[in-house]
Length: 413
Image (tube, rainbow, N blue to C red; front, side, top):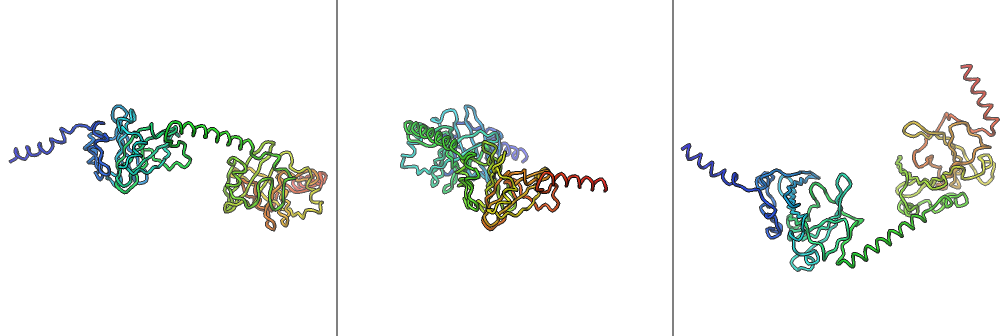
């Protein structure tokens, strides 16, 4: 009886022991069944079943959002990727990097003309952890459960390119954009485009070059320091080309480049651009719209001193003092002389005594009429300074007298 049981055990183990490792020939297009299998691997198989079939362990395995992508590599740049979900196969991918013609003899143009396939095109961007990547073109027959795909970093010519990858996935579902641990995202910028033939691709290349030149010309024509002078300020409305109420995308379009600094504070977003001539422009947004624009210039944007501005009958200015401290602990005292009714504010930041007859505004701020200025330079919001380290004085002599009085008080204490 024991001998009989031993014989049955050997017979049961015989197929496993004699199982040969699959080769690239087992995963050809001829052995593909759309919506079912590629070679010996079928959709719905468990991880253990696939491991028994492949005999050797996967070269690499990656997980992403509930999926596991296992990769096996064969000689001559032939790869097989199996994607699992909940422990079962949901996608099989066979790739021939050496010669795509061996995988599918027909070009993409011929496949698209075929009445047998109803191919839907999707474009994905694949980028690895080192920043390198490519654009993947997926031509998917969702109804049949078969997808033809190829990756490129150049123009995609349909009548020249052959599918280097075949993907089998469940019928009625789109193919998962996965490739050896790299997960694709929809490519809206279209780093590469698909063209019917080489002539169209060459024309497209010339058009891209012209668009790049036009973009460079627009960048060179971006606003400069002279566009933000005091003469081009409209209180309660605008500074140069930037108007209150503009959307974020409109301001970015005017500046023709992204901001040099972006800060988030409370319900506001501040963006700062640095221009030539020691000029910086700060736009403050709330709910995606400009509520304040600040132009700072070194040396001064306006030649008049604070004393002359305060003496002017044109402005009804009220002074408020704020502590402008940055996260590392550095900062300054900000003096804001604000005409709330008109929507214009003159500002200066100091770290010592503030002399009205000598100091000119370092920055000018346009804000909404009837609303107080927001004490910010686009990077930090100030807090009311009840005990400022510096104080405003009419003249230098007054400042010197105050310094002497402070010194006498310190000696007494």
